[in-house]
Length: 164
Image (cartoon, rainbow, N blue to C red; front, side, top):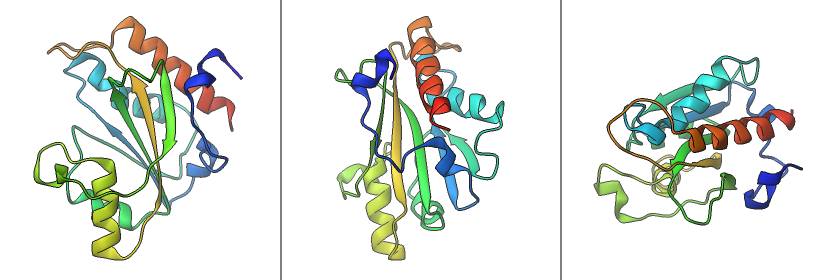
């Protein structure tokens, strides 16, 4: 295991190979025009340049939308990829996400747990959901990841790529 594993929470069913199916969705969240906020999209760019997960649906958006509850209701597994500022994430973290209704559904920043809870409530189903959170540092109006965020992205893809 590499040096980044100490910040990693992973379950046996959360390996990249398990997302290589049409019943799976890999969803990058972010804004490439805001420096490290583009980490989710950069992960999707990496994924599209490889032979990983060619069967899965791959998409990217600036932010989650309430309608994403309908989108995930049709999937068995979903991997969300987003930048994080969380102080307890050193490089990246992969974690299983549980549904939880919160008040973010009324804002422009709806949470993944709220999307899941909406999916469960409206469609009576719930896919298995994981979040790959990659540590970012700068969020100004500028294109391009910072060097430290780029290293964190490289560590995440190296780790996930090694699980195939």
